[in-house]
Length: 171
Image (cartoon, rainbow, N blue to C red; front, side, top):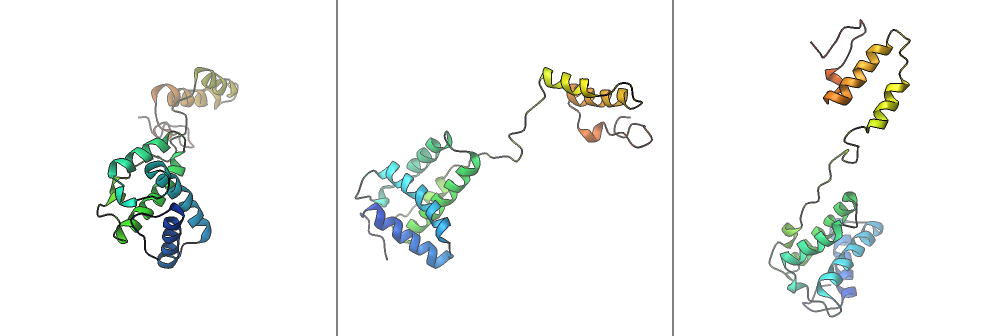
């Protein structure tokens, strides 16, 4: 099934899905996810039927992805980017567009552990320090370790204490 330059969205998406199923062996669940993103993209950029994918520009791709980042998590945006990249490569392979539109898809920052808090609040630090038992032989040491971690920005390895009680990281 080839793509004509002006067609309705359903025909375009069906041709894309058949191609992905045949050439990449994608499962229906994956294709349904891709379809959802492709439909959002095509409707958002090209409007109502008939759609003409040859009118797509790199600016359209950047604008669409930019509009999606506000309401979607970085992990979801990775899926959106994958679906769009696949769809735009399909269009190029069918001769619908000459440009490498998939290269226009902007990267979405997503760092591992990016949702961790940057630091403890003063109240949280006070709670941690209050939870340490100062009456034990290790209590003052534990308090010093926590205090160094919290106030000096030291990493755990820099404050490590070996079993004999001597400083392993601070010299």
